[in-house]
Image (cartoon, rainbow, N blue to C red):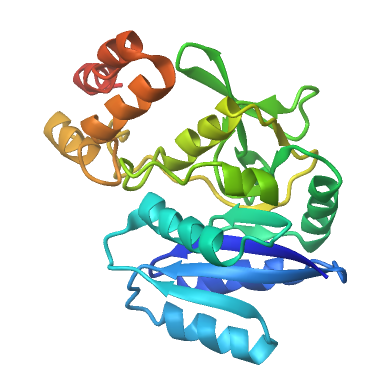
Length: 275
């Protein structure tokens, strides 16, 4: 029996988390045994209990790890990845997912079979409720400018990814570093994919959509142009925004000091210009 380890982090999205696990569990792969690593970041909505009850009811192998309530996305994924590296190193495949993805069992089945027979990291792209592309692969085209890589593209090779669903062969997962500790929430997945690429491993978007995940809205974030400048500056520097230290680190690490010095100020210019 082959082993596939699914890693996710969650906080106060009980219904989404349960739906994510349930739809993944619908994949028809008799030769594969699924194991789940769920990092619950001290949810107050009963997520941990609900996941444990689901595991017992459906005889699922789920390790629920506890967070402090301040791990956020990158911190939660770091904890889950570190635990999986230490305890589940015999897995043939590792799947990193966001718990708000509603998976299509047929597509997931085919994606796993494709990844198991190849050597590439496979990115499972998602669409929104209207059937439009939402998240997937990322290819840098000029400096820090990038374009989305979609299942329908002729060339599906990419530089990194939104980690809504990423399948990583076990040998690559064990060799790759964990998500960089500098990141609290965003940028962790982008940086993680770039690190894998620098090691010489190929990253490719799978050729069909694997499920539904609606895009996060700009409303109420630092990208919301309807907000006052002072509020946008404040939101930008929040953990869920684009904190200057993390943004500068990402730029310098992946694009060099010159680019970091120049591009680290562009978000502030955007806010000043009302863009």
